[in-house]
Image 1: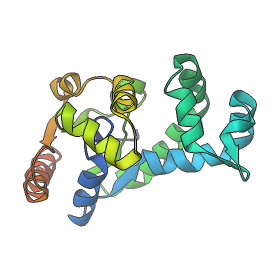
Image 2 (image 1 turned 135 degrees about the vertical axis):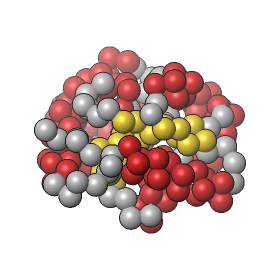
Image 3 (image 1 turned 90 degrees about the vertical axis):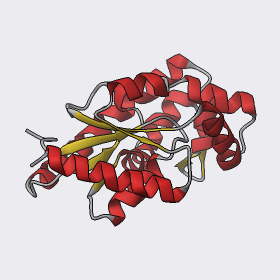
Length: 197
């Protein structure tokens, strides 16, 4: 069965999952990155996406993620249509990669931003990266150039961090310094290795 040695890495938008994944990778842990896979699948499905959302989301034969995001983050029905198209294809790729990594009999991370929201992956152990709502908003505003309202809208499309933390097997708080985050990652890596022995 795939995902035997998997730990889902999740959080919410702008909590620092990518930074945590990078630290774990530097510690020798293999990572399956659902976001990278979804970007590839998104471009592969550009014809279907244009059929669903119109030519305004296509620029130079590629999906314009910002234009598509403006539609799907303000319209629940549109978001569900996009997810229905992409999620099965993304899942299949991740499952195939997991089968390969399971053969190594070592824990690995599957970085899935919407792990709890999609409820699609049969992974028992979950690592949640948390931070404060204020930090999430300011990171989104800096990183994406969003207004406070746009940032909050993106955050509101996902389950709250507090709910995710309650369900988690492991939690890393990313509200402090990078050094503190690195220490937390090392501690959790040791916990994970102990749990898979």
